[in-house]
Length: 238
Image: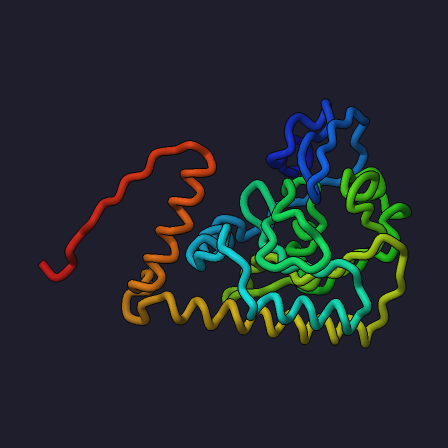
């Protein structure tokens, strides 16, 4: 692909995109002119950090859901998401106003947002050349407004975003951006707390709690994809 941009899990660009969003399936053939997201310079380290948190494919968590509900109320926004950008998808740790749990990365707004430190604000996606023919704009959930604040782990690793979505164009002031940054900081604090609780301080490896959480997540992924699983056990004391 020209200019180093990536293909995600959505299929052949020349044939369009097939997938599922909010319980609706799309199968569309079109000429794609939208811009697919670039990879961050520290993508390898970013993905490793994301995997080490054992957050992907986990169940609902009130600590995250509380923040998305508060943000939805504060901004009067129909959709608020905690989005984690994985290798080929964006997965929603918390979602308010949306049934979908993930979308392909190559059509993700949040995959663009993690390429910078500032909040990405799209006041009207229909008038933005990067997104005007994006399937998430032309079909469900019909995104018009988007604001995504990167969620940053130490080492400038942007794991995903806290994002706001509306089906109509909106304005977004500097004061609004500051408020969104404050809400995102609450999510970052929760991620940091979970990381500390599941990591051995001396070795930097998963502790017992982290191992159990990661093992459960891995088994769920294997079951979903019909894959077998194996466990290698090493007794460090001997």
